[in-house]
Amino acid sequence: MKQRFVLDTTAITDAGLRAKEGYESICESAQEILDLIAKARLKLNISCYIPYPTVYTELVSFLKRHKCDEEVFIKLDTWLVKKTPNRYEVKIPAVIFYEYVSTMRQKINKGRKIAEEFIWECSAIAVKFADNREELEKEIGNLISKFRDKYRTALRQGILDSAPDLDVLLLAKELEAGVVSSDAGIRKWSERLGLRFVEASKFPRMLKEYLALIEEGKTESKEEEELLI
Image 1 (cartoon, helix red, strand yellow):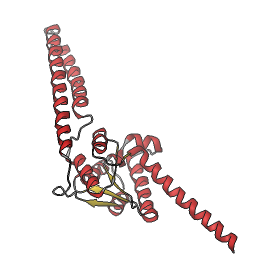
Image 2 (image 1 turned 90 degrees about the vertical axis):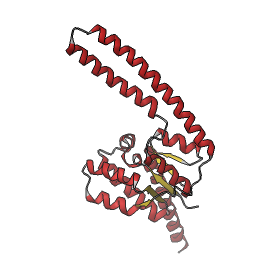
Image 3 (image 1 turned 135 degrees about the horizontal axis):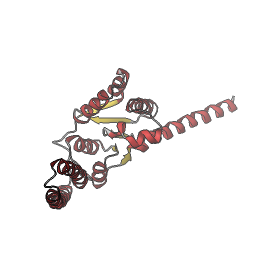
């Protein structure tokens, strides 16, 4: 059975992937992973897709911000299959929508409680530093920063919060493909949809293992042929 994978932006840009593989920059990471994808395509007939235009545009913008060489973009266009998911034909079980709405309700309630806690804390700080405007602004600024981090974690972790995230799942569902990402929300809902999920940090080593076994098989076949001569 032919293997297909749908890549999220993090399949190329994930910081954990760079640390694990020893890549020093985003551009080096992109270059090396695209080279592996090219070899896997030619030697193993493994196809890697990227949702177009959502994830493709996101990834290109990210690589341009890091001033990657033109060669990286040529490889991206050559070896990643750009495809728009068929949003009208892909069928998603109703229970998934039910669970998603339930999850969002829980997160909204959690976010409301966090906001209430910080409002009370902000009130206390306002009273404490009422006569010192400079110190008041400093404390409020720190509090806002803490609130943003906590609120973002509470609401965004484990959910699909963008069109590119959703397109990754829809395209994978359409193609019966595996999903490559480091996003917790994509992972959670990939599993709920019964899709194969591969951590972005493990994807390069998986391809390397496939390719190494192919080369090993070729070497053994060559040795057997030589023995028969």
